[in-house]
Image (cartoon, rainbow, N blue to C red; front, side, top):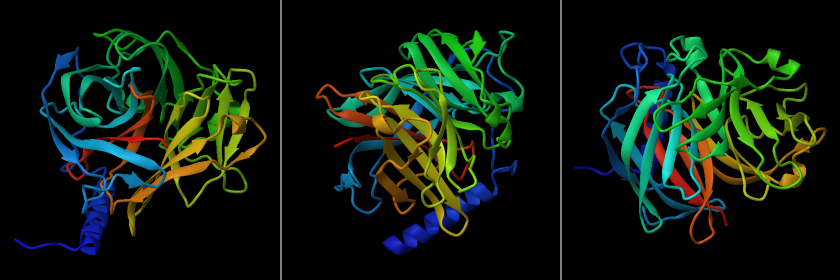
Length: 348
């Protein structure tokens, strides 16, 4: 047995992460299911607890957030994986996630006090297209984010954003079905400028304050002439285009509304030379308006020296003690070199 230094561990992580992205389209490493599920099925999962710092599991303070625990998740189903969108119920115990391979997952989160310990009652099922059948076209399966409009994560209605075939659809769902959709949200004309694989990556609804009822839709990387990132406020009292300062070459991967009417942004940067990075940024409710260059507050920024992967989904709930809990989840792209991770932090 030998010990690997922190620097060597980081270098190895960069190599493996780079390889994962480099071979993203290599059939021998990708097991994305070619045929969707016909209906809901249960599956068993195994978990491995994660510290956020690979070297010191006792550390909990990272940036302005406190780490509450995390899991590396393995499942026996080839339909498990690719999770880019996520929602939690108000108690933080029922998870609903969407895969970019046209399926949904519902699970119960287990806790030991504040610490996340496992997933149980895991169900998988197909996302239904407008014809009431499972979405089969790869160009229409690529769900990237979701926002609850009504109900909870067991039964209700959600907005779902898709890229490649760019659209935002309204999906009613029950414990056994997700869809078919019963309507679409009209997109701004500027959305025509989105590239195929850099479409509507982040979606949230504002649930409080003066902008209550507004939909926030953000492409992964649609830049203005100054290199900042463009998104849209749809509906609500002040619809229009918003511009968010692009910091350090990061792109959007997810968004979630905060209880105070603000917004959380999940961001990612990937370079072959440095691996993958993640960032969580908070936008104040007062800054969410057209015509303003929005900066926000960086709550956490981490490279893959820490225990991260391709972090794409984010959700928010209030814990019993009143803390605001952030849950983030990774999209493993159905790659043997990437992981499905779920982690939780609390805001100060």
